[in-house]
Image 1 (spheres, helix red, strand yellow):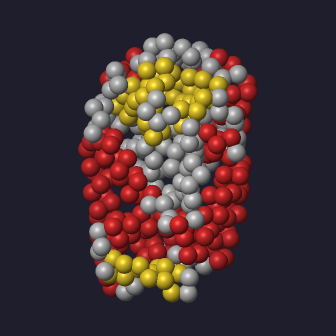
Image 2 (cartoon, rainbow, N blue to C red):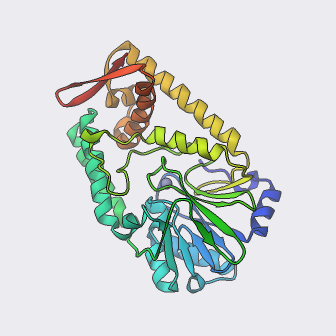
Image 3 (cartoon, rainbow, N blue to C red):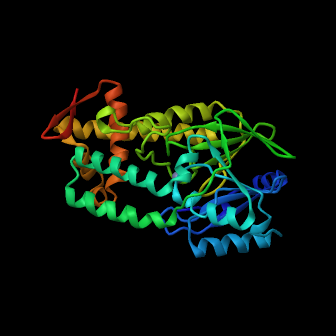
Amino acid sequence: MSQDAGETDPAVWERITEAGIRLLRIPTPFQVGRVNTYLLEDEPLTLVDSGPNSGKALDELERQLDALGHGIEDLELIVVTHQHIDHLGLVDILARRSGAEVCALDLLAPVIEHFAEEAERDDELAEALMLRHGIPRDVVSALRSVSRSFRAWGGSSTVAHPLADGSTLEFAGRSLEVLHRPGHSPSDTLFHDRERKLLIGGDHLIGHISSNPLISRPLGGRSGEPGAGRPRALMTYMESLRATRAMPIETVLPGHGEPVTDHVKLIDERFALHERRAAKIGGVIAEQPMSAYEIAQSLWGNVAVTQAYLTLSEVLGHVDLLLDRGAIRESEIGGVIRYEAG
Ligand SMILES: [Zn+2]
């Protein structure tokens, strides 16, 4: 799934190293493979993201820091790019051992501070959405247990510095502009080094996989109840990508895989992919009205069962594009939403 480091032009790595940025690839138990964390050798000494909460991840992080001449105790600041557990699980352990202060987008701060409660409420939304879109109750219950068991890879921490969208994080040797670009998750935050045309991007833009916009509760206390209109994650994500596309950047440092050096081309490929997928889903619905679960099954077979929430999010994201254009319409039968050609 992931590329090996050899595929990136060495000149790109040289520029990144010259910028005082070191990549640490930390293992995760998830399908995505290793997560990228970045050490900014600046004042304060900063780690962007942390890896999941596991002894293996902690060992690797410590070993890789050591190879760069640093210890966990040297860390002074920890920055979190978004709310997913492969990025924030170790934050608290690292902050306690080093005394580093944690900073994150202001909307993300409460999610980091109350991780388990927030995760539980996310699961409630997911459960309601899955039932409403035709996923059988036994599949929903099974997924809820899986999700609970994953929670141990996350963890809460105190956020000393909540960051406002549009604010600037100042270091001795750089300024990073803080940009809220939700979609992959509601808290996706980019850190833009304008001078170096460089973006620390979390999972907003990944070279080798299209970042699935998972449907999640909106942040900031807004209602995420399905009845109040479910979040339109893919549309939010595409709007964020359009804003990123317009930026004059040369390098994106992603949360997984290799640096992205042509963000405009990659974003255009993503737009084309979503158009193709929307057209395919439109074609499936044109044959007969279907629930989102039935659409997912017709596209992905059994994966729609084992990865029910992921594939549901994927279908609903594209359904939103079609609804927005008036190409399809939705109706409700017995509490389950169905889609048909408009
Ligand atoms: Zn993520």
